[in-house]
Amino acid sequence: GKPRPKITWLKDGQTLDSKDVGIRNSSTDTILFIRKAELHHSGAYEVTLQIENMSDKVTITIQIIDKPGPPQNIKLVDVWGFNAALEWTPPQDDGNAQILGYTVQKADKKTMEWYTVFDHYRRTNCIVSELIMGNEYFFRVFSENLCGLSETAATTKNPAYIQKTGTTYKPPCYKEHDFSEAPKFTHPLVHRSVIAGYNTTLSCAVRGAPKPKIFWFKNKMDLSGDAKYRMFSKQGVLTLEIRKPTPFDGGIYTCKAVNECGEAEIECRLDVRGNQ
Image 1: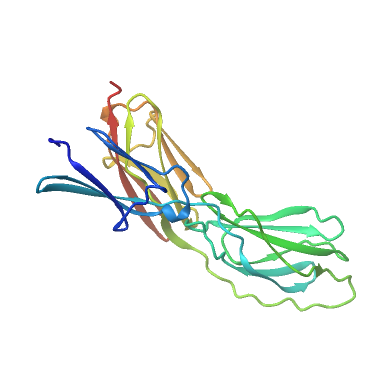
Image 2 (image 1 turned 60 degrees about the vertical axis):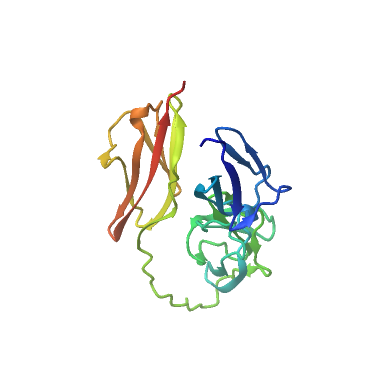
């Protein structure tokens, strides 16, 4: 704007702390710096430009995420035959991001070497089988979100002793549960503005059971089979790579997830600027 506008930044309606956040203004742009991002920096940031009685503003939502805390209240519920049943509750601190699953490990009391039994496990209870008769076992569980596994685990206080044969056990009756669910995006696509000629990626996260099929579109056109694009899917995180984009590659990109329970889609805008 001309003359040069007055620029004001707010977070959740409050003035920013200059000790925590830096702002640099020039005649053509305004830049907000968060040198060391922490969870409390998440929120809605609003920037207002004002020239006399004319103004314009835009709101930017920032979500800072971190590794989660460990699960809570782990319990050894039952031991029978060569099996042990465990249950726990989700972590108090989810790292400001959706909990994607849990990693369950076992260790023989004699060696205390940990072995993974389940990873990316979505329930908060499980049955560990094929334990060795006459041995004692400890169990631990890690939480997982987009940043990775929790730094520490929840560990059972008392070991599970696998009885030697001679005693009869009545296995508990567990009600079969239907874990199928329609696809749901747990992390959105984000609008991006990139420079032409440099490979760029769009990412989001989805969950669903059974595992959904993924389709990518640009301006409603299916990108399957187009050599300019590469699609990746790892542990529910979906990525679209656009090789050396040109301004022509700008537009609305859509990710669609489909399984037998339903479908979901999410979109974002990609702007490609010339490299001059």
